[in-house]
Image (cartoon, rainbow, N blue to C red; front, side):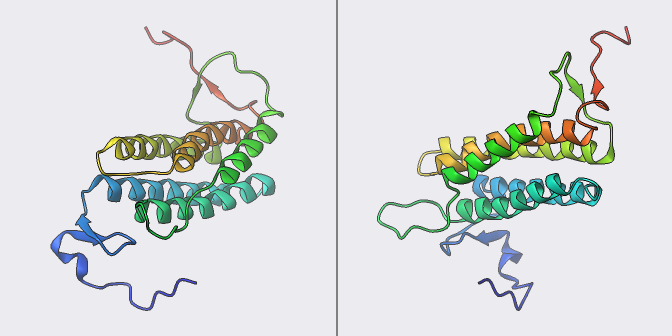
Length: 190
């Protein structure tokens, strides 16, 4: 259980923040930026959920994803170290559940004939925004994993990759199962 009695601690006033290990890093550190961008993805999904009152199945999926994103933030906040006790990590089962949700939504959609522009219903537009934030988070996590001395669990990287796919498919579902998709027309404005 997490208990937060005090919201401000003043320990970050020097431009650093603590990882879950207690190690302090600059607030611009790539690990901090990566889990901060995961949090931004989560917040964007929270905005989407303001527009899913008529889609309880999608809303439930998004609620599970929000919880998973907190798991991923906790995973990233405690770097894997040899010989250290295992902490909360994103696991393959979470990736598999996301794949199942993608398939369930995608089964109802007609095949695409063009790329989709962000837009349509408010839920779809916000899902596209969440997707682009998710992609940025994924790029940061992959970059972090490539840094000497840093480690990131493979399931966390896979989860973010699948999540961007989920958010795209969910945007189409939110656009009346694709009927309201805004399609790209190449060269339309030449």
